[in-house]
Image (cartoon, rainbow, N blue to C red):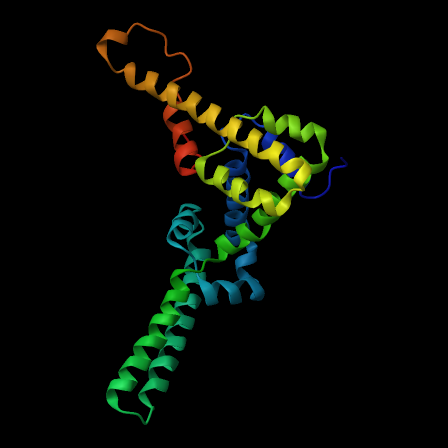
Length: 241
């Protein structure tokens, strides 16, 4: 199958020695989104309009802070805060002008403020930027599995997936694959997930055993990095250590 725009990062991820190629793709998207946001783009009007409007989630504000572009982050947060203040002042002032009984006005104000803050708490410029491409990557996995013999072999020989992305592929498969591939895919998916999470679990068990004096002189086998690999499997997080 001839490689197109989205097949390249998908194939690259599945060519990598990773406990979850999908986590690897998502981390790359996240790293690129952080770099883009903290680069010169933060001065562009269209980017600032979006960051002012929706802000950032807790995870990604920490990532942006770690980027060390403190001036860029300060500018984005300042104008985001300016917009938040303006919007909430409008909401509270509008409710204050209602000519209804005070109890109704109070409920209307609480409802408007809560709705606005709920929207902020569930929105993030970085998350949106990641998810817009991530959805296409998932579609590409199914397209490659349906049409590309080499990718099917690669998928079946992979080190499996994290629990979350195993569940995602399991759920999406009936919507994306034709009947002639669906049964085969689910069987392969179950095998690569279960076989490999058991492999990592066994490595983790030996890692634990190595802290027992009875095993101090035994080899580490494949367990030295079992803890970060287990974190990938269980929590979809690729650590830096």
